Length: 258
Image (cartoon, one colour):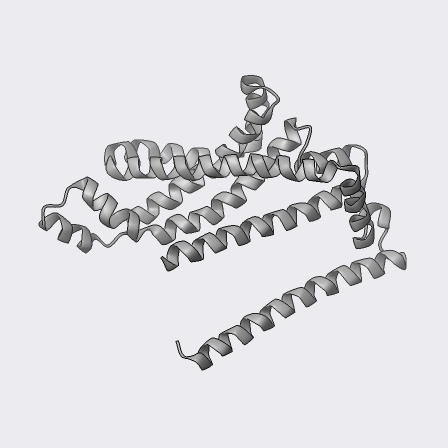
């Protein structure tokens, strides 16, 4: 790519960023104005100024860091377990076609099941603790990771596999030298799905059993009918998910570049 094309791409990306920031500022400004003039009821809809005040109060009270850290740790554990187990199970399914055929309908069945329906069972089986939250997140992210990575394995060029077989390559060599390296883009893409699914699962789990975390913050705000607290929790989740997405995108660029 020549220098002029690079400069053009940078200008385009800068324009996109400025437009995105402008759109956010516009929405927040309209929201604030509508609540101040009374068109929107600030008690029900809250407002940007009230949200920022609530976040500031949480920060000064020392509760905000605790809630963010709790959600981060739970999400990180669920994410790591989900991607590691997802990759291992996908490798097993790819290596053993019989197991893949047997498991396939069960994967589809579990994937279509609303995981929140299993919440009460998890509480009874595991207890109302962090383990239930992580298992809830795993139920959501693991199946998606398995299906995504396994389908990536299946989409490898069959002619390349035949070529390696003609040279006497074993199944293990084909897997390690061709299938996994060729599926790197798919595996990295599954990271983005996994991190979002992990966060969704953690928040759902926190709705049910947690005493701390952003999900708990939202649920507690709902119970005491404090909409400022609810909207603050939602806003923090948006920021939190954006940061996680950027981290995964950075990892993706490094892995694909290398």
